[in-house]
Amino acid sequence: MNTLVNTGLILLSETTAANAEMTRLFDLDFQLLHDAVLMIIAIFVLFLIASNKLFNPVRKMMQNRQERIANDIESAKEDKESANELKLEYEEKLKNIDKEAEQILSEARAKALKNEDQIVAKAKEEAAAIIARANKEAELEKQRVADEVKKEMITLASIMAGKVVKASIDTTVQDGLIDETLKEMGESTWLS
Image 1 (cartoon, rainbow, N blue to C red):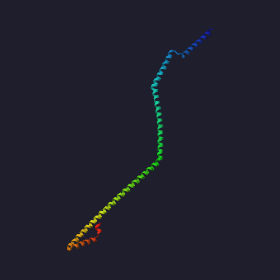
Image 2: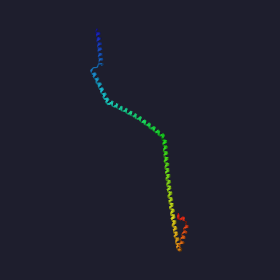
Image 3: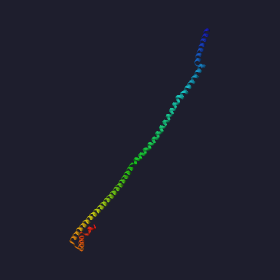
Image 4: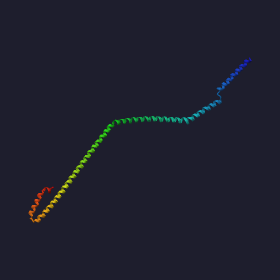
């Protein structure tokens, strides 16, 4: 029986030792709880500090980046729409460019014809002025020649008068000679 008691004691001691080890593994003593609470508080404080110093700036940067990307996408859409509008406008202008070119050419032709008419009218005016000036000069030349002829006739008449006086002819003969000379020269000479 002794062996039995010894065996029971051995079993009991082994059971208590196993229980003691078991209780130590899962034993939540005050020190372990204190350490766990301090560790949780430290982790929470580190999380708050990291959140304020690291996570919030990163969140803010990500938010700014998202807003910038959204703005870029929006501006790209607006740019694309305006580019499409410009493209349509230029295509419309290209369709109308032939009409505009024809209109510009017709305006240029009309302006050239107007200038041509003005130049021709001015040339006609200048030609008329030149003809009028030439006619006036011809008239003046004709008058000058007539004056010279008259001077020559006066000279001739004075020579004749000198001959008449030399011949001592009476005045009736002298008047007859003058009339006869004038008739010979002709009235057209005096009138022109």
